[in-house]
Length: 442
Ligand code: PMP
Image (cartoon, rainbow, N blue to C red; front, side, top):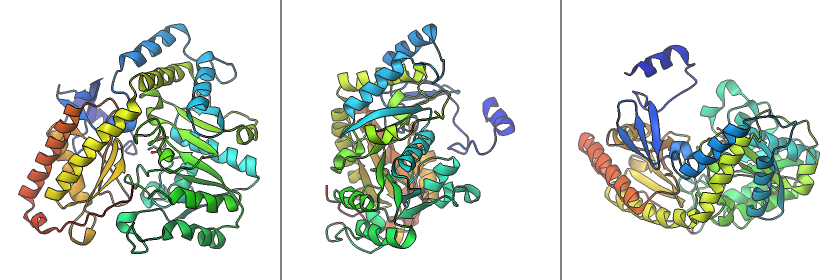
């Protein structure tokens, strides 16, 4: 155990939880690789939890942030700075539909809180519907929006007027249907759900196009057309949480672009500023104008994060990283499907672009969180960082920076193959697990 980990245990609250039995102490990042305090190098296929969208220590971001730091670090939202206006204008240009006015914060949690407040002010309604298996943040409202018990600590947020409807979890369909013949029962259920579990006067329907922390659960193509139309009948504005799926990650500009729906509000964070703290809520003119203040965030829109985001978006555009994510995503997906043919404990391979999940299961799709944890540790020992998630803790999440190369994808797939082989070597019972993979419509 390093000195840093020892001091971490003494001085950091245990709520600051980390991966790995011997926590990783990172000291450097460069492109898709990070180095720990023992000098070991790792291929980062979780992108620092999807925050370093264009790779670690990208020179364009470093230059923009250094230049800004030497000039003006921070005032507050009481004064205007040009980078904040520049980024707002840029977001209006690249987001779909009539989304136009932005509100900046420093995290995705605050971005979602802002979106909820805006929707409540714009509609005059209070109630919100989100989806099971969702994740929206760890404040009281964030936990209230979240559809997973393990994030609702001590029942936080439970008393808020927020309810969770069915998501489209095709691998574990609550209606025992398959995606090709289901008739989208999960989406249609929303109508009855709203009529039985709310007052029928909604402020918002908030959802992630692909559920991130929930385990990269990916709905079928018509899911959002169906659910958003139902929610709007009851007055709801549609808040699209793009914190994980935004800015090219899924092979399209935004996750919701796969679903042909225009949101009334969108929220962003994580990769937008390539690692600097940022949150953003963008809304139509009408919705944004309903929120006349006061502003909620001292550091929201700070010029360092704004410049980092502008530089990140420049690189994404210049290097056409959305298309790169689609191409590298296909390579990754193909490789993962090949692995799941060899290793049936990979019960489900799902996601889009460079956001791919592997559900680790035993016989009869029994979730295998211990195996997933072992896989995470074993991959790290072999020099590969991946993520974990899902309500049952049995989903491996793979999301490298969008700048990842073909060789790096091949390298990661090789390490995953070796890791799985070693698990099969130490757990003989795994050989008897039958394949349970399902086919998705796309
Ligand atoms: N929404 C989604 C979809 C997220 O994945 C997260 C973070 N995991 C958040 C909101 C909250 O963002 P933050 O941690 O920046 O507050």
